[in-house]
Image (cartoon, rainbow, N blue to C red; front, side, top):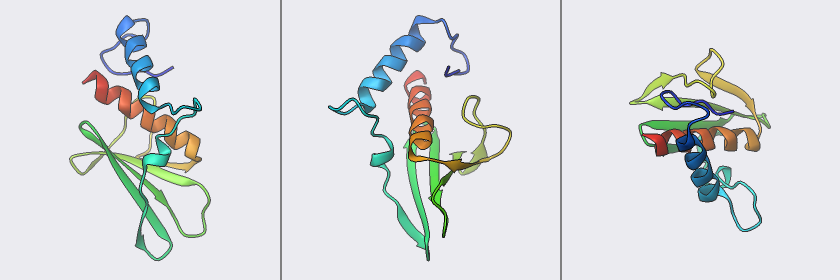
Amino acid sequence: MILIKGVLPDDYRLTTLYLCAITYVTNKEGKMKLFDTLTFNEVRTGHFQAKQQFGNYQLSVVLLPGKTLYEAAVFDQDMFVQLPGIHDNDDVIPGLTPDAVDAIMLKLKLIEMAQ
């Protein structure tokens, strides 16, 4: 379940936002595609980073040298932030598959739509 501050889980607005977000990110094959919208740039040798804005929040996703899983962090005006349902008591979220990054991006899209 996705929890957004100020929106009750049984609130019809959450269902509407969820359906709008799913429609927004689903391609013809019915597969999520948000991860595929990220553009990774090599910021240092073997260190790749992608950034994407979601309303007030910016998602940073990195792939470190020699790693196969991603790390992500969320920023608000260049400051680390932790959001319920995304973070677990740490600024950086390690060990993410592309599907896990997709889930974070969907949650951030929902938050953006709710603002």
